[in-house]
Length: 147
Length: 147
Length: 147
Length: 147
Image: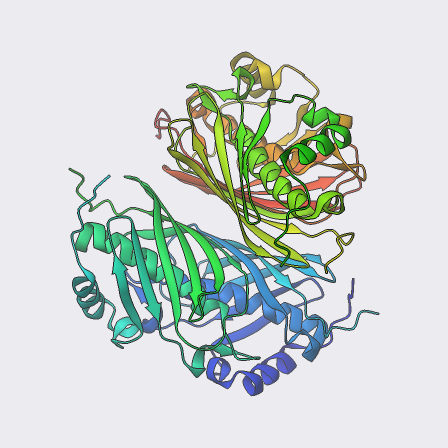
């Protein structure tokens, strides 16, 4: 298991801004607040467009956050060679209605395999309450060189 | 199990356009192609903004399609009283990379309960190949009147 | 995708009886009722030991049935080289309480990949009612020779 | 959320031995090693009958452990009124092959709701390595009295 990070938060965001401008052109949308060799915390700004009736953040916004935060973890570990890592499975339980405001997604790398990596994600709202718990499996890119 | 539909495709889309203008203001984004008492088929137009490297449609676009199509099914069955039905769980397996172009989501209502409803979703690309398989559980709205 | 079956029902059961005598020594426990290149139906005899309060079959009995029936499908396709295929993920929704009596598990192979195969399973009780819906991903054995 | 435990480890095991003698007649099979208001750790003894080729513990043994340990948590919180709590959903990722020997399942109660409770489970083998990660949703028994 590689334990050295290849990219820091700035390098990840610069890559995504270049590679997926349509999704990552807004610099404040996703902010990496913490990053180490097995975990990452991503803050997601939300605004009116993500709300559902009752003022809660929509489920798809939370699912996208899980997918994005897990991808950030793989980019941090492998740099550009993680580009073609793809989600093979994602499972999410919605626990409480998140109120409007920023969301915090804490990612833990449970397994870092040559073929599959399994990632646990917990999303909390600004008041620290857990609003969703997810688990996602990524199929690792064949471009990654393991040493 | 209620077997009479309360709303048809036009009524569902009119409600969503009014209730969630930020998500459903584009009339061609989601089109209900088929609807009966236990299933629905939704066509999702995709464009460049949904693509990932290699020209495939992004995972979050597919997850949102599952969530939306399942919600359409509950609105069809219960009309406006389904408004506050919320997803409690969603699980998706990505089977093949969907190429750019329209996606077709076939929803089957496996269980229509007073508290929980369980829905199976299969997403195919325009060439008919299955690209994702999902299962979602909705917590039913307490506003629904069961007769 | 290999479409020719390598083993029939009798060959599968003979192999398992030899390989896992502790789990498959009882010839009537699992019966393959149907088998083709992409699907299989397995009947599972249940008795008092599998019941929970209220006379329903236990959840673990259903989960084991999913796991076993999916494994049968891979053995049918690949014969002994599927021996080391392992489950990487399993997700199940329990829809209704199954009453005592035989269960029927219908397996559909959604994706038959060189690394991962994804299998849909629906379990019905003797009266034909759907009692559980599951999806499982198998990591394919490296011993399999693909032609 | 009730934070007082109704039953201790001995009371849970005595109840199960009486109620499900066929599954809990062996006093050493499941041992509760730790129990507090939001978590529980269960040790599961394994022997030859649970092994698969290569000497690893079978998937169904792990799934049953998740289901059982989550049920223990609800019995600890609610006593006999939790008897009719039922699993509505279970999702498990198998991370590494567990070697023969005892397994340790750590359960965390993520949500303790009046209708649904969501439980996170991590299974480790004797050497402390994580072998599976699961998430299960229980439908709470209507017999539970909430104060």
